[in-house]
Image (cartoon, rainbow, N blue to C red; front, side, top):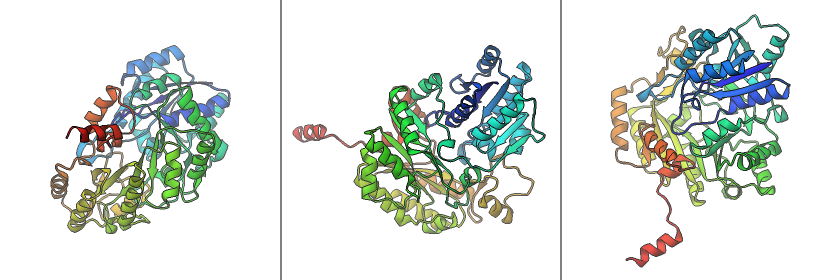
Length: 458
């Protein structure tokens, strides 16, 4: 069959992200002998007319739309993305009657609500590489499912997780925004954070790709596509099973070194592991702190405490690896006292950039959603397509916003609201700067030559 896949993501801050999931589905379909073309709303300058032109030229027999995010999870500057998908489906309907199937992480977290909102025909919930292929194979025989939502538990592992079919044209476009390519080394999350949708979407078991296939992919990105940086998109890179070290050792043995970053949990790392990662190009680290006091960390279901965050940050700092942290205020267990304690904890951290969010976006199927219902913050009828944020009972929203604004005022490396620097960083990327945004915010370390010049001018 001839299939057109469309990435409907419209979020481009702080930088645009290549539609990795769509290209993995494309690889699965192409490997089975189907013809696939990929297109993208951001690359098309948000133009629905451009997408329609592609449909007219390509004449697909089926259309798939990938949804990355429902909204921007920023209470202080809310942006909903699902309306764009609805308008896209409507325009497609005016042009063709072929089946329209939704997928992607944004769809899978609340599929029934998104189908109702957008008017698409079907949706695949979970791993699209398997489910979309099954849908297409059945449709080729004239068999369409009775249910609009097709669901299956996540099961792909190893070589079953395909290497993405990167689209040359799309990759060229996205590399112009920071020169960063995305790579996934594994799926699943073994942690139990109360707000997180990763275990819902990918399962609670780690399912790893073949390290050789991962490094083959990195070599292709750096060689054929000229990517200058890699972002490992795993929910947690330094998994307890140490699969991440197998990937790093494969890179080391093959002499592959490229600036890269990933999401880290502040546990299980030591000087030797960081040294090994540095040798393959580790340039910065995103540390999954999420809360800023022991009380709120415990209530979020974290297995570590704030001293572990400090020690992890110091560990990366000793090896000249820039770090970024993300914190949410108002989470379960939050009080006025923990807010003030958390502000002090964050302000006192060195050599790092901290992005501060107010409230915790409630997602379906998470422990936080069940907690919010017990506390009367949510009703059973709410589908959560309209964003709802958890702020602990007893915390006044206006007080919290003012306290965070005052607490982080004038602190360059503490960013509140979290999108405060977006426009400036986008400008830097447009001017040709490349790399990870935290390194642009952190004070730059002077070279030996600069230090000699400075001392010589005294």
